[in-house]
Length: 182
Image (cartoon, rainbow, N blue to C red):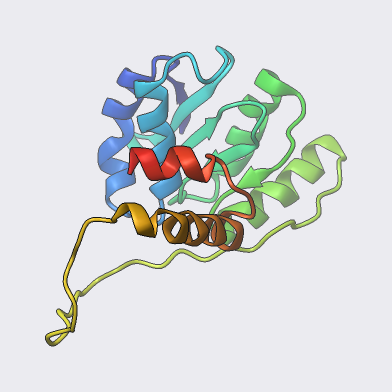
């Protein structure tokens, strides 16, 4: 078993994409970060950690970090890989602000990190991933798509602001700008 670090995001994605896409819903964050690294090379610093874990040249897991964010683990098919990941990541960073991973991998990593470094850990947030497997077209619904009129702009701005507050906790783009761009 070995760690294969690939610093170039294009080469990294090409190397791990098949593994990540086998469980696309579970690995949606990994895939999104790969896309962002490829499209916006200046958005993240140069000390990113991009690696695959391999056993007999077969990928059994993916490990990523884009500081200042924590470590991101994919599903790992062989739990014996965790100590190998711990040693390599510790050699690279020494400290971590956290780990984001499927439940089994997250707990195994946190416990092994504690044993290796002596640091404690505290679960912050448990999340779930849902995967759409079927779409059922609704029966005929009333109404039709229409363009916003000038009279409706204020209503659209209010809807946008309320959605942002509820879904995101903040408004990232001023509603005036958002309405003009959409």
